Image 1 (spheres, rainbow, N blue to C red):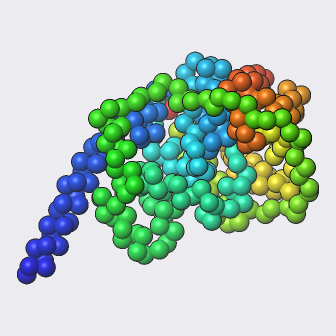
Image 2 (image 1 turned 90 degrees about the vertical axis):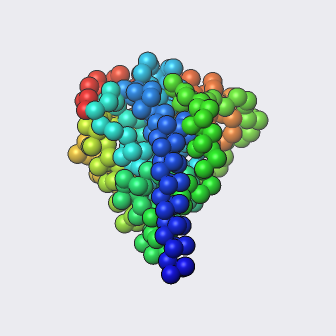
Image 3 (image 1 turned 180 degrees about the vertical axis):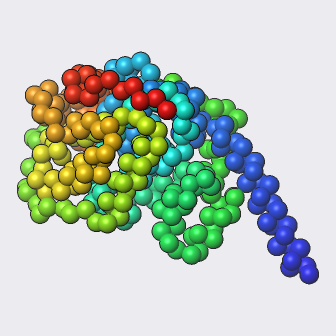
Length: 303
């Protein structure tokens, strides 16, 4: 009897504290979905750190918001889009595509960082599946209201009590990487997308289709390394194009422009080899803005 009472008390406490955290998370600036809802953009940038630092909303145009996040992957892209309500002003999504996400699938090193958005899993069974990966013990844990907030509880409460709302989501990197020779990258065998990598692409496509918006795909710049022309990555780009072919899809990864070649080669545009600095972001964003005007038409598919 005593054990039953204790168990019921623990369940009740989990529910009560979980409801408090759910309330706070929905209103916390820690919650990227809440940030995006508040900004209500018509153009949304999503992806990982490459896109976070390379795409400046002020250059892309009014009504743009950069929701790309450090250490995330394509799984975050789908989860964020599914966490956002339809019926907003959103008309275009710019996805900074990383072919490594497709090559790695759920084995990717960045997938573990998706746990910081575990509260979204309460209404997203697909996200629950990615977080648990079919492991029974993880599935049981995730049904705990408090467990979803492990490691993020303090940040959630801080973002609720003292929110730091941001109208653009963009925080540039300052500084210039040292000049150095362009890296020598020998050819490698072609990478074939695994089944879970293909499934990820279709999950992103479904999330975009849910919002009825245009999808623009690009690859964030890296110093001396244009991933879009690497033959070993070609199967991953082809898989991406096939998965997104049924959407209003503008593929900028196939566009060649001498300005992009210059951005890839100029070290002054980079904070480090993989991330643009503020000047690089301005240059890259200006090229992308022009390419979207010339290749993508007008994004006017409102929800």
